[in-house]
Amino acid sequence: MKYLPITNKLFIKNRKKFTAQMKPKSLAVFNSNDIYPISADSTMPFEQHRDIFYLSGVDQEESILMLFPDCPKEEHREILFLKETNEHIAVWEGAKLTKEAALKTSGIKTVYWLQDLEKIMFELMTQCDAVYINTNEHYRANVETETREARYIKMLLQKYPAHTYLRSQPILQRLRSVKEQSELDLIQTACDITEKGFRRILDFVKPNVWEFEIEAEFMHKFLRNRSKGFAYTPIIASGANANVLHYIENNQQCKAGELILLDVGAEYANYSSDMTRTIPVSGTFTKRQKDVYNAVLRVKNEATKMLIPGTDWTAYHVEVGKIMTSELLGLGLLSKSDVQNEDKNWPAYKKYLMHGTSHHMGLDTHDYGILTEPMQANMVFTVEPGIYIAEEGFGIRLEDDVVIQAKGEPFNLMRNIPIEIEEIEDLMHKV
Image (tube, rainbow, N blue to C red; front, side):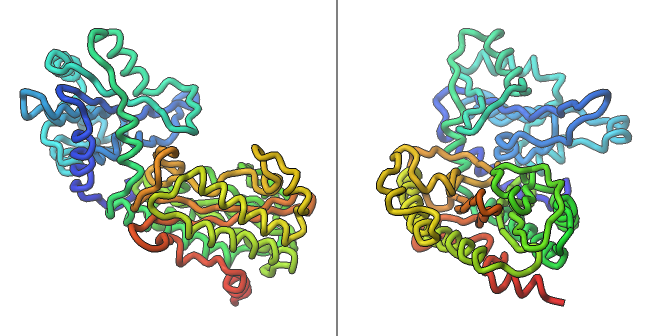
């Protein structure tokens, strides 16, 4: 890992919060992700399952965490199973966690090698009545690949059919959506690295630069600051490409007079940042571009003020839609008759803003959070309105990451990233 060590106090506290929600005489099991193959002997870079990381800090493949707070054996109330390290593995892959290193990382005292898993698991299953299994219940999930977690769940159901099986996700969705201060600090670090990347490209962008060259400048700055790279696939969309909401080809040349929509964010210690800025290729916005840009910025600023404890996610988006409608009327993109005759299930403003304005953010870019429950202090949300005008060949989106506060307006984790037109133009023209 490139990131600096994280105190195990965070993971100890996270486990205590989870086990406090478990039913009596129950066991919870969490698996790491697989290393996914490409072809031949090639693999994708390993990405740890965020749930086992959240609860243990272990950032290594072939790892299993078990939590059994009512276990008769005190030493089995928290257990880590790890791939046994040896000199051969150390030479070819790099050293894996030792039992001592796992304790330091996680705060878990009982660590077994995986070869002991079947024997210990049988003992635990004779002592528990129910098992919490960890299925993917994120509202955006669309998983076609069988995961390591899914294979393990299938084995449990076949081998131990008489047990009661419970869902970890309702607990995790609530716990992970409300951040500890140390988590907010890690997200802030990710946002600060993103800022460094953005300031770098403001010095770099000129007419005829290629989108992938801008992507490379971001990656350079991210890696130099202990990030392993982008928190998600970056969008570097010049001109009309900005009207493709998930444009990721990043293979076009940026022309004079165009705008570039940059939806990028660095990760740090598996925590995400998520930024969008829109800048002029030539360093100066046209009047029309300024008018649309400032309309988007006003919507973002007003939407941000609504992210307070108790806010309902659905009602929030309705209110943002009203603000956006007003701005689109002012820009001449909508008429009063368009609004009067709109379909309430697809309001008129949706022609120019097709996506939502906010989502939870944290260990996942689209992080855990139950959208039918009110917002709470220490939740992190993006704020990302946009206006996409296909007929004029450009789109503008602006996005910051903010923390809901117990009192007052949200705290903007991207407060230092330039967003006002004047500052962006000044920085792009700076010699």
